[in-house]
Amino acid sequence: MNSKTFQDTGDPITRGRYWADEAEALLSTIEQGTVSFPLLQGLLAMFCYEGNLGLGTKALPYYFRAMDVYKGLNNVDITKQQLGVDEERTKQGRVASSWCIWGFYCCEWRGTQALGLRKLTRKPVFPKVWREPDFPLLLPTSSNYWWYPYPISLQVQKSLKVEIREVDALLSEVVEEALDFIYPDENEAPSKNPQLALQFYRSIVNWKQNCPNQLRLEDAVLPSAILLHISAEVMLTAILRPFTNMNKAQFGKFDPRERCYAHASNLASAIWTYRSFAVIRFEYWLTHALGTAAYIVVGGTEDAPVQMDTLTRACQCLFEMRSTLPLATDILCGIRIAHKQSKEKIPAFMDRFFDRIIHRKDGLMHHSVASLLPDSIDMTQNSSNQDIQLQELLNRLEDIGVD
Image (tube, rainbow, N blue to C red; front, side, top):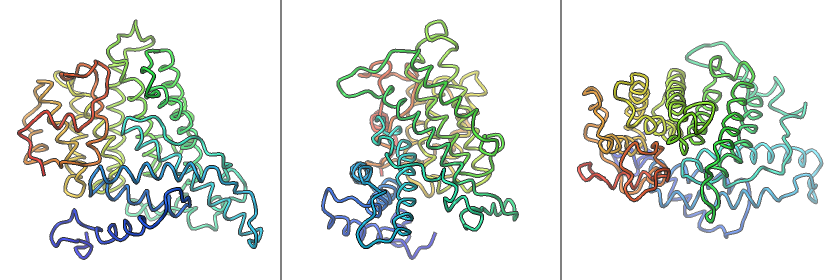
């Protein structure tokens, strides 16, 4: 890291703060209700910055304001030619607008699901322009058509950006319905329908199995392709988790608790694979997924080598990330507290993951759902299948330092 970007000399957590303060001042001059793609991108950039290095209560308003901007942009007619703008420019604007808004639709639910909310954006009305034969990223003459997997290989390869967007959009459309099922409207009770849960579960499993060969997890070398499967595994656990107090006879087809353990293992393995292809220390989007894998197996690691392996891999990754990402430390604190609450013994070698950890008073992940299985810890003042936020978990133990 370049120390010149630190606001406070010697404190890497203040890196980029000069930029963030200036961006905040500029955003404050923009009227509420204004919609534009640069504004949408700026709000998301500030959400990512404050979410990683700032306060959770400061990051979330940027996120929700970005949702409002998205809704406004999704009502814009991009096929209408503006006065004084030639046809070629209008076409380029249409292509860029569609690519951007579908990209936002695809990435938004990763954060929304972590916060325990139903999907905040609905399917774009914009056409999927990447299916058109003259789409720029389909042309070998485009620099973004290629990818150089250095240092793994010096051989140029296809970036598969269009193929990844296609399957990501299909997954996001399934997730939109699944999140409405998991997190209903405020006046509705969570669904107790295991048949409907199985339907969404099968849809995502079918999506995984129908991915093109080069995007299947066992064949993927592109980090962005591996991330697709990581997100899918997180959703599979989210669908099954409310039903893990049922047995196979009650749920049908399989035991949801054992299947949750299996997907947590798949999740940790997929991130471990990603770790072999990329430097993990700055991959902030993996912190929630790693926390999910770890929380799922809390209470189920004794005499269970597979679950212990899942926990170890998740903690190892978070341990490697903690020097650069405060989010990772917050989640490690939550894992430690959950294990203490479960009264489950863990091997002595794991103590190093939790040595001298200090969580923040207000981090973004404090507002996220800790993906614990029902009855894995004492859920005092919680119903057996009600989500518990990381903040509530952190409040349960006083011997962990607070920064």
